[in-house]
Length: 404
Image (cartoon, rainbow, N blue to C red; front, top):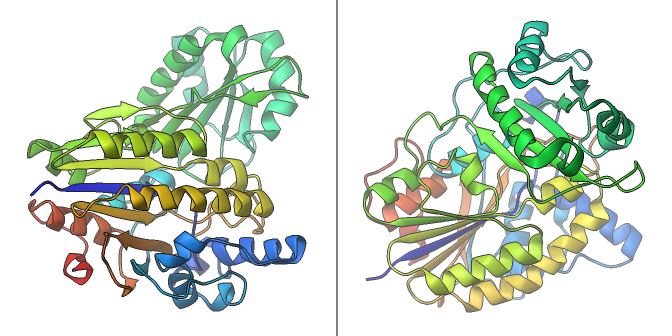
């Protein structure tokens, strides 16, 4: 029997504070409920997500936190399986969330640049500049990726020094102008940084190319690249590809897994293109395949920018496309929707928030199934291992039998 799984990560779409949110200063954070509340107050109506509700999102959100009650229109009946999962991993970052989804939680502590200014070690900066030939770096601080372009974009173009910044995540980010600095030069610079940062245990180096001719119109492009370390153990993606199956990455998935366990990598920028590419691959792929898509816009365009209305409107748009995704599922296709962390757009600061994530599953002909609280994101990876008859993962509990 041909089997196909489609995973869509609604990047940053948390649905309520996790039990250990206090350790992260995130008690009370709730991405879903906060969006719905602001949307209701400013738009004068409930958030309308009929297809997500049909898969059980509202019920999952209410189980994780009562905050969404009466703020979102629920569906009269549910045709999917729905639950909410807590994170085992020690951080609330993108790689940890995605790796745990694929069955490999991060149980060690990442390295971080804790200082808000003068964030990077002097010896690292000196070696990076020496190896790449740049005259120096700008930034060297915690910053919003859009704000720092306004602040330092002109100086970057004038001096030729790349803009280097970080956040509360284990990350080193580099912004540079695609024309004045050069895209390939930026990518080469980031590869050097990736090698040098291994000894600091930094999870990701991110290239953030931008264009424009002044602070009024500097804009990041779709040529972002993430340079991640390898997951600490084989993921369910590795197991499927080693067994002869295929894993198709759409968006930044391949970068997050350092291209390990990935058969094909398809780039796309923006929600529309990401969903279009997913639908195309659903039609193209056949037996023993996973189509794995990250919908980054929710996080980078709305969560980090603290834009709850924009986030709500993007969710409503995605919900219209979800109808197409569901219609494209045949009896041998398993559709999974989830997230990798929270990013409450009403929370203080601009960082991710420690939250439960939704776990929504759909196959044609299903009736509503309550999956309840899942003790790890790894339940998704274990379910996929079960679905494709692979060796079990070391973490997670499969919910496959509940789907039939």
